[in-house]
Image 1 (cartoon, one colour):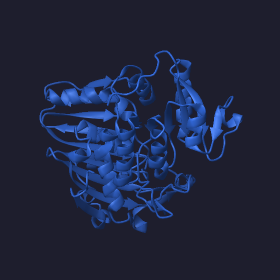
Image 2 (cartoon, helix red, strand yellow):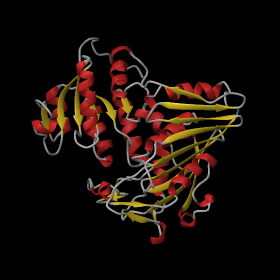
Image 3 (cartoon, rainbow, N blue to C red):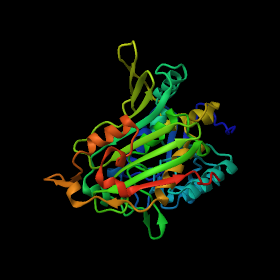
Image 4 (tube, rainbow, N blue to C red):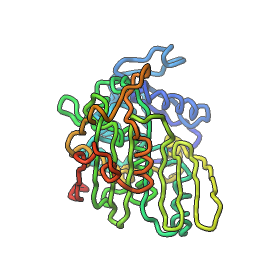
Length: 394
């Protein structure tokens, strides 16, 4: 797509929808880019307006109505960091006005909603970047180059591991948190689809299987230790059309928090990528281990560059189609199985639930490309769900 160009040197007027919670990171980032003269915060869309104390300075125009705010501010771009079920409608509200987008992940709670958003954005001719910040890491193209040159031999599969800790209050932070649906509307807020979605998207990117049509089949195991609707301990295996395998295991009930990572298994070595740290470990036959560190390109900065000089967008909607196939498989799978009472415990004084042994299981799943049930977890056997690729890509 050839994007309309902005005047080089003129800060891009941006509206932020959702400035609390994770949205605070976008406030900070917009300030950083404003200091470089790249953007200007023209407005904030929030259901409850921010105070100056909360915002930390003089506030721009605020409104509860994104369309009205885009009209009144003349914004050229919108950053959407709102609850998952609102993404599609708000993205289309912006697109209909010719406003370019940075849309937080997951882009939608269902494949149908994702297609409505992606098709609407394409028809409007606006640029849309999906907020998988890990895909802005320069490690991603570097690892893909290593794979292409055969640095670790033939790729046997790609694993992903995310062992995180979340208090029970995390699932009470918003009405949609920990929900699969709310008031009849899809939410699909699970470990693999929201907090550890980057592990899934990054593994698919390293597999070179990012588009919807790259997916041949999906297996899920969705479980929960917390008293929620969605999964907090889960794993997924994606079979790609190329014949590859991507297996990602995640938990929010770890014994101790660890850095999430993706690992490429080759016939003569492996590449481990700690994607939040932009750190890579290359281990291969007849070589000592090499640790590599990379920079990353900010996704809003990349969107501005795209609008100014045609720089290629890093994460288009089409580049998240395979991830959205995973979201759809999780959405349509049976509701997550509650773990038996003897499979989890509360941590005294920490308001959180832990699944003993889950840290080792998550690591083993990524290492052996196996699901929890295949690793002998007795509580996972009934949670296995296989979805052959009959998911529509339209």
